[in-house]
Length: 191
Ligand code: 5GP
Image 1 (cartoon, rainbow, N blue to C red):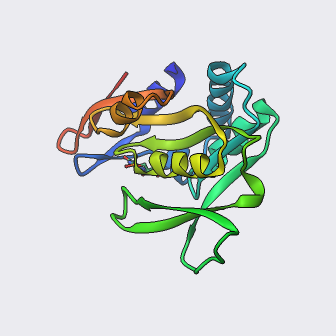
Image 2 (spheres, helix red, strand yellow; image 1 turned 60 degrees about the vertical axis):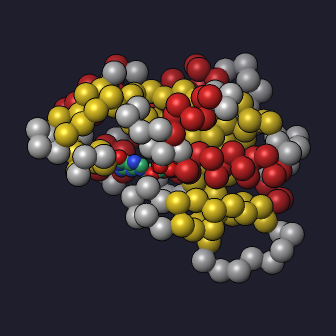
């Protein structure tokens, strides 16, 4: 998606050698017009897949998922990062290692909102090592729902998540792929 790629080249900044900061338009301040175009692009790519639910993970996936859901006319379900013990049987639960914080935390969704009648599109802002996506796919599988695929705004293609998930047969569509980046030069190569 050319508009997004240009925006990353213009406003993205590099932190360390593997974190891309897009705080000015996606992760802190949000460019809602750009998000609208992102939502339409996901709709174009996953039209006719029978999607009736969009699943994401809090927090930064929620805004993107909501705008995308307007094009699909379906609800958004966001997996919660849980610190409390949940009553067995009420929720599906899985563990996810956070890329940005390095911590492993429990992630839950209520059984009330995901089940065998659902066809799910997973949406997230970034794909790096694939832990977030794998956790969400685990929740979809536990619920007996069908997975249409995953829509990712920015895939860091030099990290292994995308390759591993595609090798498992998951349809992963990313709108911009960062091939490499360097803190020294501050440059992210995007295609
Ligand atoms: P993964 O689980 O694929 O390793 O990482 C994906 C999650 O980590 C995303 O939900 C995103 O919030 C966060 N993340 C991974 N890489 C980056 C990055 O370069 N920049 C930002 N802002 N978030 C990232």
